[in-house]
Amino acid sequence: MLEINKIHLGDSYKLIKQIPDKSIDCIYTDVPYLIDGGGQGNSALGKRLFKRNQSLKDSNIYNGFDYKTFINESMRVLKKLNLFIWLSKLQFIEILNEVYSYNNGNFTFDLLTWNKLNPTPGTNNTWLPDIEYCIHFREKGVKLNDGYELKSKWFTSPINKHDKDLYDHLTIKPLELVKRHLEHATQPNDLVLDCFSGSGTTCVAAKELGRRFIGIEIDPEYHKISVDRLNGITSSGQTSIFTDFDMEDGKI
Image 1: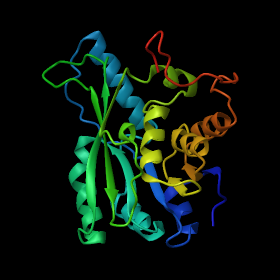
Image 2 (image 1 turned 30 degrees about the vertical axis):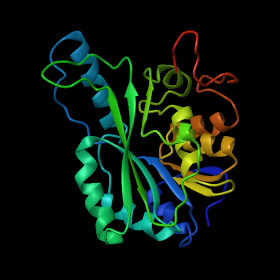
Image 3 (image 1 turned 90 degrees about the horizontal axis):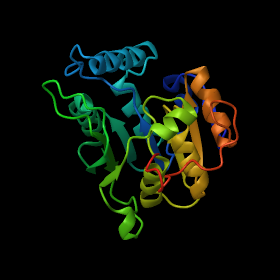
């Protein structure tokens, strides 16, 4: 069994095999995205978007996601299907098909969104990139906790530039949002797994909510950032005290 309340450095497809069957209460993860290359154009902004996407490719976030292995191992280690997956719209069909093939459709799912108030204005023959998507798969018997403020399927905020600057990760999600999801769909002392833990947002959220966690991250730089983050240290080595939403300047 992988050590609990620790972020492990390594390949998630290999390390997850060390986790026993039916031992995880919830998986919450932001899988490697597939990115639609359209809409960038030749403007200065378009060139910046191209540079961002190239950076994602170079860091193995862009592709190389093994749907079948990930879903198969997730089904094996989960006590009951309780799976949050952040994904791109290009991945919907394959992930839905894989979950259905292993669970025979004995689940419900909800589409959750993060709606960004100030997205990058890439408007060259495309919609604004102002929504990110998360699917929550849930088997009968997985309890959703009460609390009206927890039950909304959408979350609205500015883009997460503040945390990106603090923890140097391109696709970091708001800590407040991750905590909301985990508080709604897990119980105190539940064990939460993040197979692609990045800057450690899931593990930080679990820790703050009194849940146990296991994180796995393959990139040594992000692994160090995430371990430091658990100890209250930013990517620049500074002690981080205020990392949540700043109501005065409207930044995350």
